[in-house]
Structure formats: C-alpha cells, structure tokens
Image (cartoon, rainbow, N blue to C red; front, side):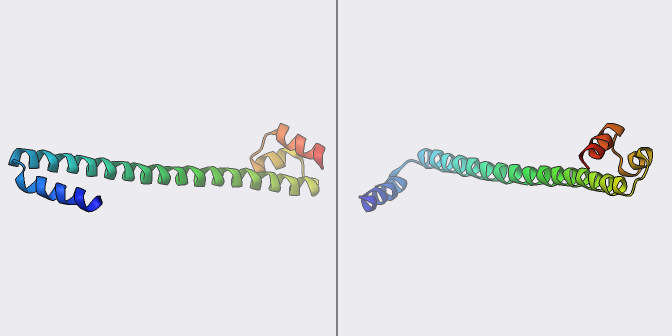
Length: 101
C-alpha cells in the first residue's frame, strides 16, 4: 500500500500543474519551518530552565553557607551582633539557630 501511495505521489508531482507543485512546495516548507521553530523553542525553554535552576541552586547554597557560618560562630559563643554581621542573617534568624543548638 505504501508503495502505491508513493507511486501516486510521484505521478501527481509529474502531472500536476506548476501552480499546484508550487503550492505543495510552500506547504511542505511551512510544515518544516513550523517544526524547526518548535524545536528551537523547546531548546530555548530547556536552556532557560537550566539557567533558572542554577541560579536557584546558587541562592540556596549561599543561604546554607550563611546558616553554617552562624552555627559555627554560635558554638564559639560570638555575640549575636557579630554573627549577624558575619553571616548576613537577621537577629531573628540567628536567635532561632541559637534556640535549636
């Protein structure tokens, strides 16, 4: 059946008018262009997602580091004001850490 369809397609392309062949060519090109645009949009979206994920990871890592610094300084009995300045956390956040330790 597939061979028959291909034969029919070939026959149509030979016997069809130039206008019809041009319309077919433009239709095929439009389908190809649409597929390409979709492919590029997917790639672009994937790249944006990766960038956002990396940025989120950096922020989370910085927050974890600040808490680790504060915990270490609390264990060394540094004053809360010094811990706030060194870790970049608020007094409330340092106070919560003090209550956990």
